[in-house]
Image 1: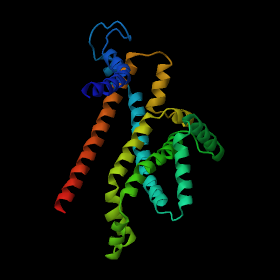
Image 2: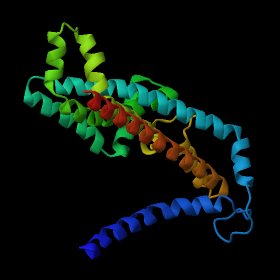
Image 3: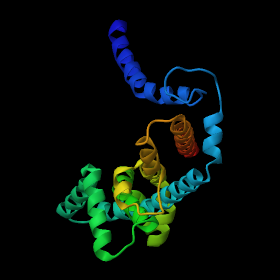
Image 4: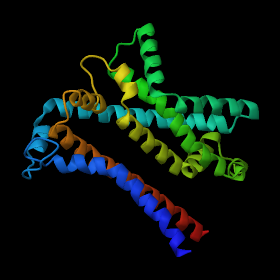
Length: 268
């Protein structure tokens, strides 16, 4: 039995090695003084200094963060409303239809979504730039939030809402005091997933980005077309570390919510 249990661990370890070797390769050569992705010479922070002193890069970083935070916040609000609407639809057929429409947006290729938004914004006269990127990111993030919030709503017992209503709570009090606290782990998960998708997206953003506005994914693609340089490696390393911080933040929030839930269970 012990021998059989070793193989899944080895397989999982190999998967992680394959996934992370390219990232660590970039990180390693971001400290190469030779300025190439081979033949390591000396350890240096030169490329990080170059990135940190590049004002244009940091404007693009700021654009990316603003888009990501705004789109994540707005899509979380809309996703929670959408999940509540789907959950409390009375007709089962209508509920399944809404879920199917939500899932179609998730499985649709990014190229199709990006091209569709490009055509839409051109037709209705929205100038490509900040607004078009923000609207696009909100659109593809909302279905993700819905899928993460909906299972928490389905876990909640209907008797909680009925008990609150019997005690005289209004619908707003039921929503703010009963439903939202119960589904808060799903809300946080949806927010962080929407934030990650926005930071990571390239295909949709590439279609709807106009002149004078860019995000990190589009900028890195433009830089890579001129050849992989240590500057890109340094920028990638910074982004990788930022992503780790986001994951750790999400982990600690989940741990805190779990400890609070267990604490409430013990008190009861």
